[in-house]
Image (cartoon, rainbow, N blue to C red; front, side, top):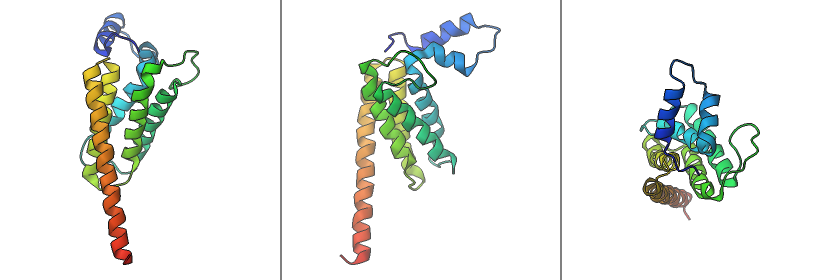
Length: 165
């Protein structure tokens, strides 16, 4: 992964492109292998509020899960690029994919906040090359996965109680 923080890269791009229109394609090509995390950051930004957006939240979560899975597999995000992502980008990609998958689960409104916060921390950690924020993202992902496992256990025990088992 690149060691230059994304904020410095954006500042350099702003200075180089002053007075010009910057397209998303140009932005993603300048970001390089961290474009997966930028997509996840945008999804986290849309998903972190307590009330999910009907119809849009699942499709955005699918986008984050796909970006994370491609990052974990070492594949580029978009159309053909020759380079393959370095091994260091793969564990955060797997965690991003897991957060995206948790965001796709249709649960009551406030339950999308924990995986969205995890997604936010993970993507910021990758984008800014910040190990502390990335570690916080891993911890938040583990807490979110535990929370969703607890919800699944409660649902299972409730279904068994209703069935009279």
